[in-house]
Length: 157
Image (cartoon, rainbow, N blue to C red; front, side, top):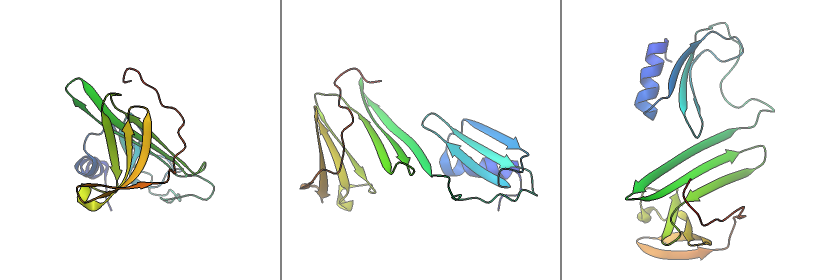
C-alpha cells in the first residue's frame, strides 16, 4: 500500500511512464489511496487522502468497465497507429487502425513476437482480414469475427 501522494506519483511514473497530471484529492466517494485514470489522450495519477472513505476499488455492481488505449509510430512520413476502446456495457471492442493505403499493416494481440503465434488483424488497402500467425510464417486465415464500421482511404488523422 502506498501511504502518501509522493509515493503514489513516483510509483505510477515508474510503472506507466509519462503522466499528464498528478492530483491529490480528499473525497469520501472515491477509494482511499493511489489510482490511475487513463484515456486515449492522457493519463492522470490520483491520491485520495480521505482515509474514512468506505468506497472500494474494483468493479462496482451496475457500473460497466471501460478501457481505452492508443499506440502509434511515425516511420518517415507514414503514420501507423492503433486505438482500442473496450466497452463492457455494449460488449464491443472498437479497434481503429491507421496506416497508409499503399502498404499492408498488421497488428497482433497478446504477443511480442511472431513466435508467440498471435491472433492478428491484417489491413491491405481497403481489405481487412484476420489471421492466426505461425512462427515466422503467414499462418492460417480465420473466419471473420469483425464487424467493419468504416474503412476510409484518406489522410491520417
